Image 1 (cartoon, rainbow, N blue to C red):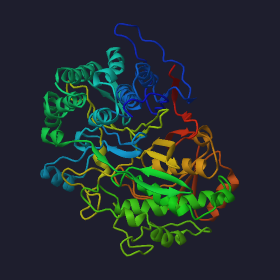
Image 2 (cartoon, rainbow, N blue to C red):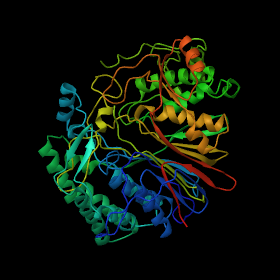
Image 3 (cartoon, rainbow, N blue to C red):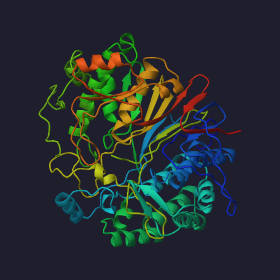
Image 4 (cartoon, one colour):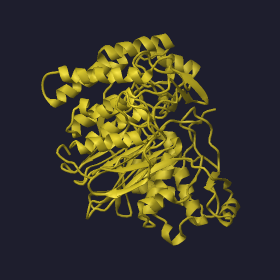
Length: 561
């Protein structure tokens, strides 16, 4: 990937409008936006026009997909700051066409290392919105790792468009959790100063490009930036410390994958909810969905029932594999799929939570006692004309803690995706990553990438991704057709945020799905509601493997010349 430059697609949503400007210029209206782009010389799609412009600028300067992706993530941290912050997280799946290799960059922070912090959480719970709910900041390290492993540009080069955005200034408050958060300072100026400190560390470092990039991470995680963050943690009553920052690194992992009707689908591992999408697809492969008809009662019913079974396994087994053995091989095996598939009754909706038993190969087991939202997420997908592809789901914030002192850095609240139930896989422990909903997807056919998907929407991310995959693989839809198709969802699971109880039998239909379909699903005992609003926000790229022309659908699209 290091010497590639070509078709680039970057997708993200949920952001505030802004526009990059040179310092001192008057604020201008955002450029006109369009949400589709097709080409083979470079396109960028993101949730803000400035983030799109940042990616295009790096393309124009000779950068490749990783370079432009890093630039767009940095710009999103400045313009989509209520849903993605540099103190948040960003899992990435990266396909390197030269090596024919898929890797996961696990840009997810962990719980504090101090055992006393864990004791406090177990006694008091994990307070949503507070700095105590912040995992170790991971986004900056993931961006640096992306540049080190796959990029060609320096940090100084890819951060420049973001500095232009930040130097233009803006309000000193933002809306979060239904309230106005007053920062009390020009946080944009402070964040720009922090980014310039990191660029200065790179410029002063000796050695190779990789060593200079490492100096960027070292100053953030072990230098004066870490010292300033620790002061703020202590001031705000948080548990993170410099030891947590110094210990953090972006783990490089193998993805999890499964086949579906001749396609290979790649997901991030079981420290995310991603593998349950693979479980659901394996169950659905035993049904003729095309013959059922798109959005027919049978189709909606079987997809919903397969999702319920798969997500039950998520809640029962998934957690940080560095702390717990997750039986993914068994969960994705042919035998386990065969014994679980007959649990789907085509005439009746399930009203129970039914995890399976992959250890003893039984279709159902007694579940571990479930526990007695708003979220902030955006997304990014990248593909270039040489076949390299990146799918990522950046997230963060949802915090009322404000900005970290004079650093300009905001933090997420991802520790709320852990629980405090001793003996369960996803219980909070020192240094443990939460099992997150962030779940990018890559799909291959005959060894070549053909689809990249990223979704914002908490627990709904993989329900939406499942339907997008079926739109493409079973019904032959284009990227835009799949993006615009009506969707449906169930909330028949324990929430990943605050561990809210399942809404058993729930089925939410888009209002464009007909009343006759809704009535038939009610007869099958689904608890049907309708909505005209979205419960998730997807973006996707569909790539023609013969021409490598990509069609992207997102929020703000632009073409590189």
